Image 1 (tube, one colour):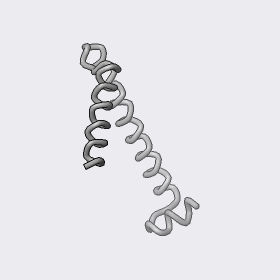
Image 2 (cartoon, rainbow, N blue to C red):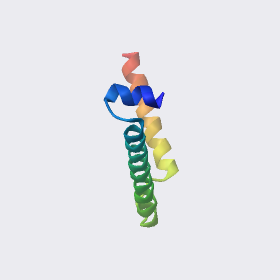
Image 3 (cartoon, helix red, strand yellow):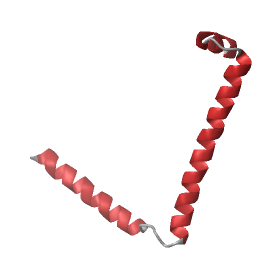
Image 4 (spheres, helix red, strand yellow):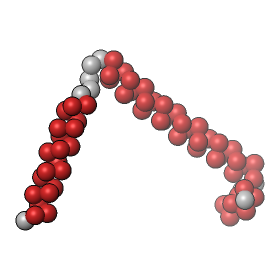
Length: 70
C-alpha cells in the first residue's frame, strides 16, 4: 500500500513514510497544544459551567423547534 501511494506521488516509500510520520507528529502536537490551552483556561477559571451549557442547549433546541413549527 505504501509503495503504491508513494509511486502515485512520485516519491520513494521512504520519503512517503517520512512525510506521513511528520504529518501525524504535527497533528498530535497541535492536538495536545489545544488540550493544554483548555486546561490552562480552566485553571484560570475561564470556563462555562455544565449547567450553563445545558441551559443554552435547551434554549437553542427550543428556538429550533419553534422555527420548525412555523
